[in-house]
Length: 66
Image (cartoon, rainbow, N blue to C red):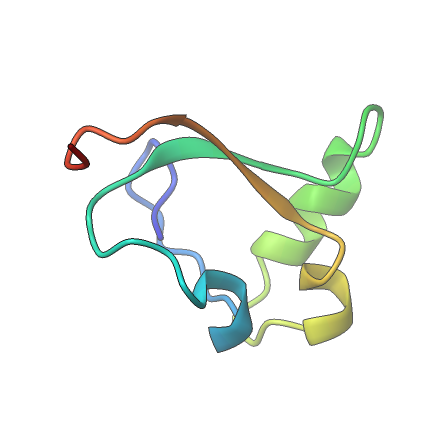
């Protein structure tokens, strides 16, 4: 998982469980007005599971899926 600037996100394995293998385009989101909380969770080198349990990945596009 990478940011639009190419920065890699470290995430717990459960977060992408059952995702398709193809590329997805979207946004990590906790809730309105919680951007700093989202940023704090995704910028850690060692992800904290409880923080990632609050995150959702909102898919905008799935170019590899048919």
